[in-house]
Length: 537
Image (cartoon, rainbow, N blue to C red; front, side):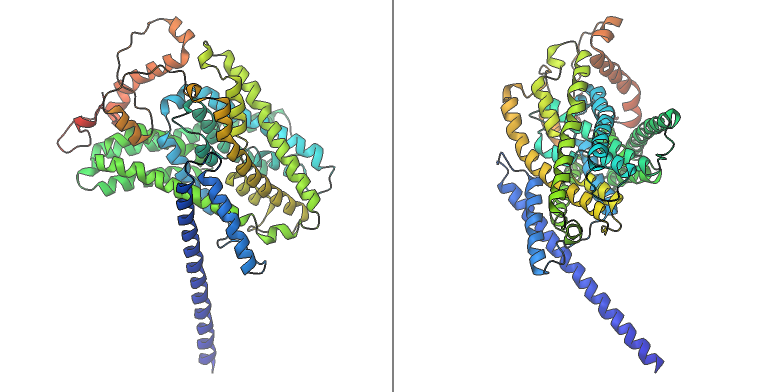
């Protein structure tokens, strides 16, 4: 008798598992089909001046969410459940790594101080602006049981710009100066926002004094430097291993796999050590593109370039598609449905605070940055400042993930104030991504005609192979053109950026490339990756 009961229970459990597996397979099939639809529509709308792939995926996600709501009679709007782990562990790393791998390094490091100024100091200014505005306004609106810690968290959440959307609305070749500033700032900004948010979770708001603030700033500086060092170390380690062992002579698959896994390992190590995985994997990508990429075989170069770009593209599309579907999740909206006017008001106020918070640092910090520039061509013009301000207004998946972390448990909440903050965050993300994203390209064309889009660098002679290599890697590969430079202190005082780059190149050529490999500095051997046909130095 007991055996029969046990057998019946096992049968029911098996049926339940089968049903669950079937539902998972159906969900995955539907989501993959939607990803394919996003790719096809993105291709068809490639020349559209208003839409880009992120906005297209967002719209498809919204439409799919409506269809699912109707078919399930209002019970659900998505086929996959949002998970912060899914976002931070699986989707974000390939996007940020590929950005570092493809970035124009010369532009990025030439503007590194301005990027750090905007990304770190600017984010702090935006954080305080939004937090103080939220405390002053929301505390009088009676939207729920929100305390000072919640308002400070709101400042960190809405200080995080959307680096993914920035990649798609700015063109690295047409506007290299603006791209390096806005995207570089976005990466540092995301890292700063996440560090701020995590620090606030353990911040004693009842005992704030000068020592606590200094300790907080010191901790942030430590995280920034440590995360950057870990990324650089991981990239150099991969370059050294591949150069010394030359794995490609036996299997190109192994060297491609090693590059991918070591890049991902750097991100996970940063998360394990409570550092900023965003900064770590970004600088790992930069170092790998400068050293490791030149140590692998030619076929692996092509493979890695396209593999990293493809993984990043799929992750970006997945992200926007899911955000569009999750925005209509009925569980989040029903707790705020009794006061729709208040929810709209909160969303409008948050959007206004985002506008003011970004303006509060873009224009003053641009003015300070221009004071250090010697020529007018190196300065950030008024029109460029407007584009930088506008292009960074978009909020995306980082804001949603942080909002879920603060105001929900397992993606759901039954508290009125928390529900309003979640729905308001979703509203701000959708509105800013679609409106500001649609308007960015026309705004750039209006403010910055094609003749003034490029940076002030004079064209330098390139070898016949340079265009090929530049398109292959997506980063600037400088040629060894002999330049007469004054060997005096005046050069450092008048052109510090160019001087630092000059001495870095001397150090790189003398020590780094012979040890870690790179373009033109690995001894040639038959069948090695240093085929003379692809060398430019």
